[in-house]
Amino acid sequence: MTTPATATTEAAAKKFLANAVGTKQIGVTPAPAPELNGLLLQLPGAPQVYLVINGFRRWVPDTGTFNNLFVLGAKIVQDIGIGAVSEGDALSSGAMLIKGSSSVNIYLLSNGVKMWIPSPTIFQINQFNSAAVLTLPQIVVDSIPSGPDIQPPTPIS
Image 1: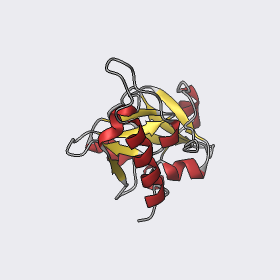
Image 2: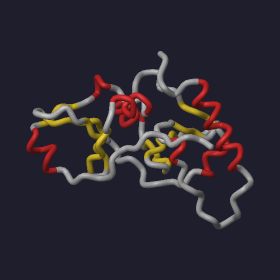
Image 3: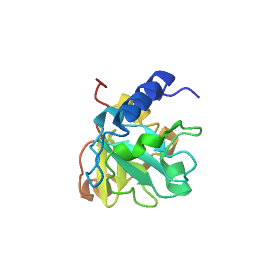
Image 4: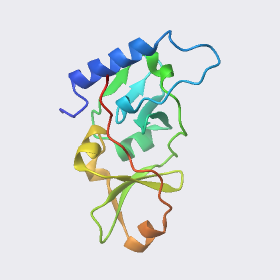
C-alpha cells in the first residue's frame, strides 16, 4: 500500500537523522523535530515503535494500540539516529481515533486528551486507519479535554 511516507520522505528523514547523529553532547536533551511529524520511527533491532507528533517521538506502547491507529502495512522508518529526536510522553495503551456523532472532526485520543487531526492530508501522513475511527456520542467527545492539534511536517532544510 502506498502512503505519504514515501521513499522521498524516508530519504529526507534519514538525512535529517544522519545529520543529527554525533552533533548532540552527552547530557543535552535532543531537539524536537517537527520536520519528521507523522513518521513512525524504530531503532533497528529494537521492538519499540515511535510516532512523531508535533516534533516529539512518542512511544506506541503495544501491538493493540498500533493496530488501533495505523493502516495495515504502515511504513516504519528504521534508523540509528532516532535518539536525536526529543522523546515526548508515550501514547496511552489503547489510544484510539475518535469522532463525535454529529461532527466530521477526527481526533487522536491518548492520555485523557483529544488531539484534533485538522486535515485528511495530516491523517494520511500519520498513516492513520480511517476504518479504525470510533464514533462516540458527541457529548462524550465534547467532554474530553483538548490537547494540541496534530501538525503536519515542516519542510526539511
